Image (cartoon, one colour):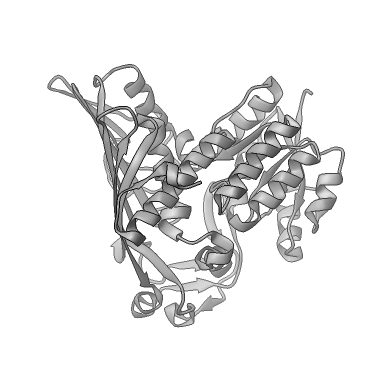
Length: 393
């Protein structure tokens, strides 16, 4: 196989960022796309120049010209689509989180084993250039033996009149489709994977989570949603039309945000620890080309520290990576810092892995381990006790 032909199952907002990795990639072609929304499908087809379109994923999987698929759908469909794709002989890249239950994770792992297809869970933060630079420094021993990691996350607003597409958020706050937990399970998958990737396997966790309705806060600040769909223009997510819902008054009352939240954890086989702190405030202005969220990471080692000062957005006006070691502070700015670069690099790795016959991260087993971490944090907060990840099975 000289060129990988790929099909997208789901062409919503996140698909625009995945498409950036296929647009100018000589080793692959986005051959077909599929979505139940025919209007969205036509728009994407015109935008990307895709001739093969389907409204039924089974038809796309039956197409012999499709070598691999990107599963870019709401979470509750991941297992069904992933297993069907591998059984149809397709390699699979699946947006995080892997699935909504441990049993579904196991089904995907078993399908990959049985079919011999490449299966990976895509978590873009681990392809973000500043994160990768920090990992390289850590692995090189630049700050000595790692002792702990601290992850800070904020969610805010782009400012007055901030508009986001309703369809982009509606399913994420529906437990039946999202798997429950916009922050800790959906968004949080990024943080818990970075914690594992940087310092290793986690044994146990203790957490506190506040669940609160977001309707009143949005209404008070006049934050609304567009009925249109979102797309990417030059790496920037933007709404298609301006038909807005009138602030938070039209947000369903059952929409809950699982923030603020704090989690602590202990790593397996070592006296190493980590922590996560998440806060959401729509009074907080977050400069962003994408969603108004940002994240930073601090790793402590025996000889110093490594800081990653941005990821999704541009909240802090500091160098993307800073290291302190032996009394000397070194700043690293010689890298791409646009969040979209992580999607381009992640797509490239999947394509190269399939063509070269290797397994890219995250394997099914690794993806399940991150799933267990997310669910252990939720269970700890719910039951007010320390939870071992092995309990999530």
